[in-house]
Length: 392
Image 1 (cartoon, rainbow, N blue to C red):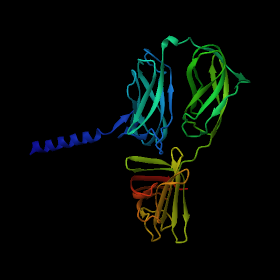
Image 2 (image 1 turned 135 degrees about the horizontal axis):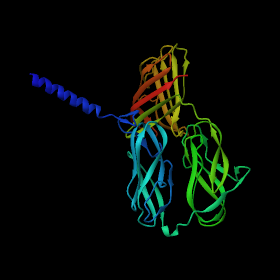
Image 3 (image 1 turned 90 degrees about the vertical axis):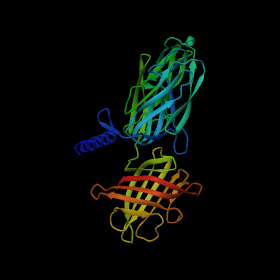
Image 4 (image 1 turned 45 degrees about the vertical axis):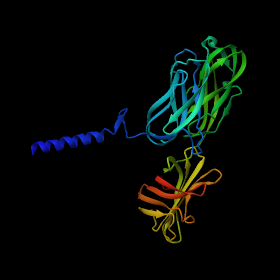
């Protein structure tokens, strides 16, 4: 019996070890459990921005200046791996832990040695999503010495600086964010120009000047603006310095987040407002209004409660009998529904479950699942829906 007792204890410890082995520590302060959920494409299925950095020469091993920056829409934190196939002797890869959701910039290191002089096409993968880009490989025989140039400036300001894109507090920069500046090139050759990092942003460009004279280049923006205002970005190159102004618009105040799945696709985003209105039946209606992380799709929920405050319980979109009901809709910028369920669509039924509401913090949590109409007016299944908001 004593032997059997020790055997049971040993087996229990093995099961505990296996269960604990599913989680591990990252850099000493994060507990990671599972893989991140993200996509290289937006809700419309279009690829996000991809920027290539560095010069790629035949038979020259790639180094730290050779990398690509891809944009990923994360809907759940965790470990991620973004990679390409090996083409023409080299590839790109990046991995790590992502603790945030929303649109994020991921840097992929280039590894290997280009073999042939050609435009090399790559397909980059993350989970079930993929996108394409191309890298120009040239002959090292044409590599020149470092270019000689000065920044065109007047009174400390970069002359004819033209800032492109709309800059918003808390929104990552993409390929639409760049600034064109002028330089006076006195000797052709390679260049590597980068601004100082300010307010979470920097701008950079590498390339080659084939001729002399006044030339215009476009510096690509990277990073995420931290706060709203006007930033004067400093740049020093060719022994000269100047600044250009970038206006950062105030970000939308986020009061919560949401997510759900339909088939093998996950949708997620933020709530910009969450508030309660009283109704003449004596109850209240909760309104949650938001959008996706890319701000190209809106998401709205309304739930009616019988009491003066939200309470835990379930609410159906097909309940015609007041005082409780729920409706929801997600639609594009043209107000065309992508998914929806309401009292007027009884064939589709989405169940919203309020799991908690704290009357002091006014934070509400809940889940939802069921069926809804899609954009082609077909009934589809909705799963894994979650919402959380701070009610104003």
